[in-house]
Length: 336
Length: 283
Image (cartoon, rainbow over all chains, first blue to last red; front, top):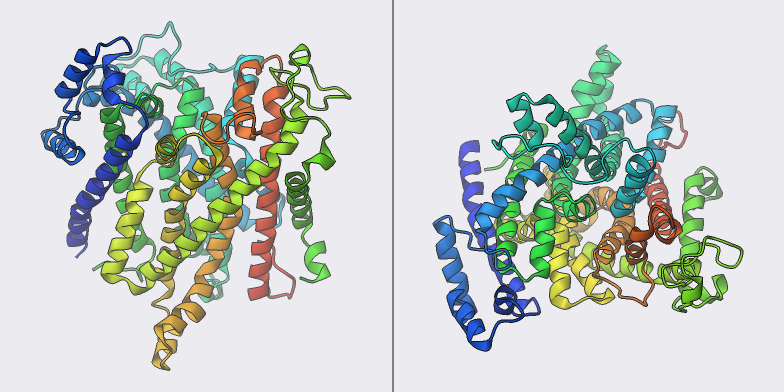
């Protein structure tokens, strides 16, 4: 039953990806400016411009261009960046792991701290932990990400000189042998402890900046869902049959509180994928966010398409995971 | 709303005071600042906060305080327009989708997926780049990416509620589908929407300011806080006030909205359940 559901969901990803690719393709066509001019350079003669236009297929009608793009995509060819002349797939292989590393660090911090703090706050409703978390959650939800990033840079890199201000590694550090592209993992595999530490130190400020809002949001939702669950009759039953308070909380209330929390975590991933554009800009991270930002402003259609498809696919799998989790968390929800 | 409601919610009073102050600034900026938010005085550039320039001056000698005051209008207008569109569309589609199920659910959720599947800021950046730089363009770009979040949240709640007994009993006594959704399902799923919207008012302000920070959104000389922080970035270590005060204004406004939203959702909860000893519950 479940296997068929998953298979259907995987099949349904195809139209979504097609929809996204069509939307992205047409949006990039609408971007003001001439991609052939962007590719040929400002000094190109009209003849050179025409030649570039023809070589890139930009003289074809848009649906034909889209068809050609999809045809090449099915053979694993994402095209060539108009501005850097590199293969998009090649560039994505460089930029994607950087963003993945940042997002993994952020999500681990966010989910673990968010749920832990939310549950802890709910268990001591009105106590000092609860009040301290509420105060923190106002700060976390209210703080502009770009402002927090600048603030942390000034304090920890500018004044205290404890952490690096930007980048993924210090200048003198040689990147570890590429295996996954995630510096911390690669350095760990190679046994280069100094590099692990250096990459880790560079992760702290951007990951902290990105996770503050998520911690307070997931914490809030977990807390209010826990309090909501504790109002239910089955909690009274659980207490009446003599379960310890700890068992009541963790075995009976928490699983029921996870449904709204899971929804928020799923949405959080989507927001993080976009939030990296800001953070990577400020921390010179050199990942997908920076790549996307440059691609959009350089009218680099193959780049925009490549990023869109990669991040869309990543998001769709997270989404499917969230829906499957629903059935585990609430057996009343069934997918046929 | 009784007096005890206000006195038991100090947060609400603080929040209302903050939001009220910014609304007043947005409506009557002249009451707060007599200086021109666009008056260049290069000879006074980057002067520190003082009695004449409370928040100092920026890189072209404009009074930062008056630009912060005038920036309130930009931000508040954005919040109203964006949330209005997003909630209207999201709650409508989400409840239809969750309640009816079937192919309509499938279709609506796939459309929502297409939107949600885009990294939001990238979609907003692209939309904004297509529409051109400007405040209205940013409002539209943010609303464009905001509605699916509501649609999915409402749908997941409706899914959990619609199989419950009271919905079945309503159907058994012959209530129409419209009545079941309107009277029995929606009131039970609206709490999370309100909690979410209360956080979102501030979040919308943050997103729009982020686009402005990246150079889209309201263009100078229109005062906009995100843009002002970006302009202050290059003076950060020495002339901190250029970036700090607009950033703080945004921070405080968002906290104000969150306090108000929080108190309202508390009230909704305490209205529904009283705790066992009769005291109002804090959530």
